[in-house]
Length: 333
Image (cartoon, rainbow, N blue to C red; front, side, top):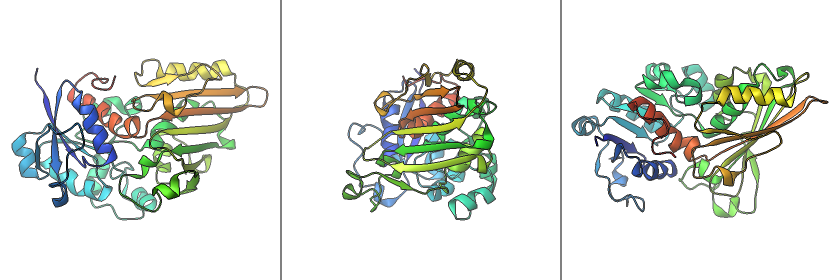
């Protein structure tokens, strides 16, 4: 069986380790570890992944190895540095950072507070939410893997547009496990700060907000988002509130069923049933449940994903399958 050779940069981080875990069971892929920093050369390969060979993360090495694609599980600054090099070496690129998600340098500068060093690639990149951009992804050479919070929020909210009363706004109360902050130790993710604690952060100006607006067509005044850190390792659960006078629970459920009838990684619950983290962790599923009170027009959606899988590595492999012309679920079910 022919296999595609896939480079992984940032393989010691949480998303990188998750990538290697998924790729190890993928029948059509041979992973290669790309060392982009001197200090990775002496680092042990994550447990269970001692097999993949290592090569330097350079254009010459990638070209010589004839890599079909490169997965960048790196900080946005590193991704901006590496993406053009990998593309010039002939590899397609799927970037898991926020480097190429926001389409314009002005939007990037506003939400990330810094200049973008690759504006041409920012304009070229295809946003990698398969449930929305599947056909564009198939033909792309640079894919911006979505953020974890926006993946859950966008999939939950998109069917509501046209049903909800947007003048009342949509409110997203989002909670994430600590792995969403990355592996680099900080005071924010230190054990003594997180355990037996529960805290909000980046209120009203979280950098993932513009992704949700871009995916749903909502205007900024119509969407309120609060991110919160919960004392667990992985998982995202979002509770989303809306108003929709003149609607019924049956009609709202029908809109979701029509939107996601053929989506392999979106699972819908019956009216009044809600997912939890245990139902999605270690999977590439996005689970969505809702409840609606027609008498008051009040409704809520509960959606859950694993931030390291559907919110990062799993979605990257889903995109990888699309650009390689493989079944979208390969290695993920």
